[in-house]
Image (cartoon, rainbow, N blue to C red; front, side, top):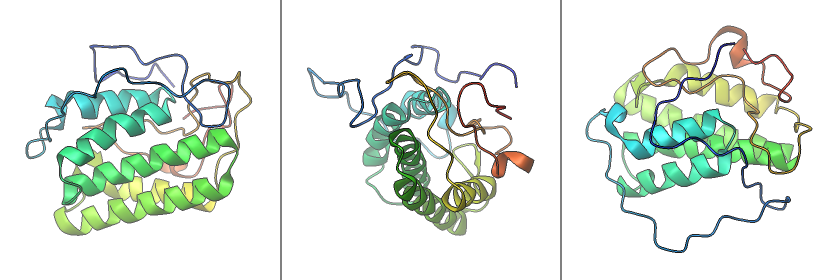
Length: 191
């Protein structure tokens, strides 16, 4: 697989990530998070918060992706199809955190809920929203729930992807073997 594309160019994803209960301390906010504007219609490519979350997720910074998308989910009032897709992404990021914590039950629970949120949005608006193929992400989240990836063996706090498919808004969703196979660490095949 080639280099992961970046969608948000104002900041590089960090090389360290927060994993609750593990080495790196929880990030502190010295000031309140700035207000985030909701995504207008399906103008996801113009939403810094959404694109930042995509880059963080693709870099294996699942806690940080969750935080970026949660602010956007709140900006949407926690209701409606866009909020449902964001909640699905938040739950999938939470599943990534649970992989890093070595908690397969938590992975299953969060991935199942991610699939449910994607499916509910799909029922309301059709197969695509926020540049994502919802059918593919429903299938992927269900495959994670059925067969959670193993916790990777990496230095504490290192950002590492635990899911093979990358979020590529506007591009194809996870497909083929990517729906069923996930990475077990940085040296595993990723795609």
